Length: 216
Image (cartoon, rainbow, N blue to C red; front, side):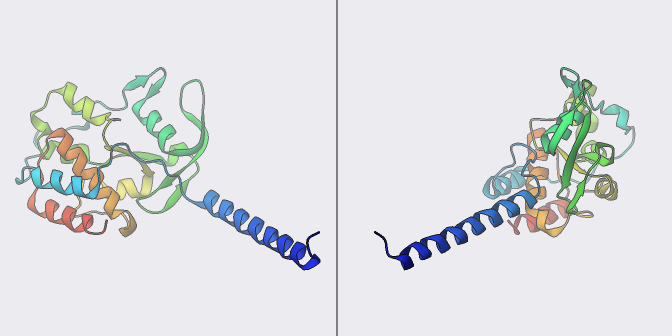
């Protein structure tokens, strides 16, 4: 039979292991949601895409209107693009028959804030509509601008706190950035969106993106 001290050691190790596992589970539960925008490139790919973008001064805002970018179109059943992002980026989200969330919480990586009501969540256009207009979208058809404004394929839409989204406005990374811990991911989302949609960057914007990528 095992020696009494051996049994005691095994029991002690069992207690230690159970404590460690429990602590790990608690930490895991406390972490923000892992959900994020799709198809974010690697650092190396983002660098290559950034270097491939046309560098040009920003265009005029003449003729710009948010109505030129029809957004929150229906995309699946009763769900529009905004509601799809709320479901994708949220934690424990439940929705009603109209697809609008009835409960859940949303972690905003821009400012490290968790929001508990869908009405307090903004869906950020990573590349703002006005910025897209200045970068080449002014020459697009309305149909193409609608596709851009409701883009669920590329990392162009992201749930964020209303406060952070409204602080950002229509500014590019040369004049607005999220908190430092999110610089890497944000720059890769921005670059991929501009690359996928063939939009230009201005010189200061490119420099800011290169600096943000260096944090990856």
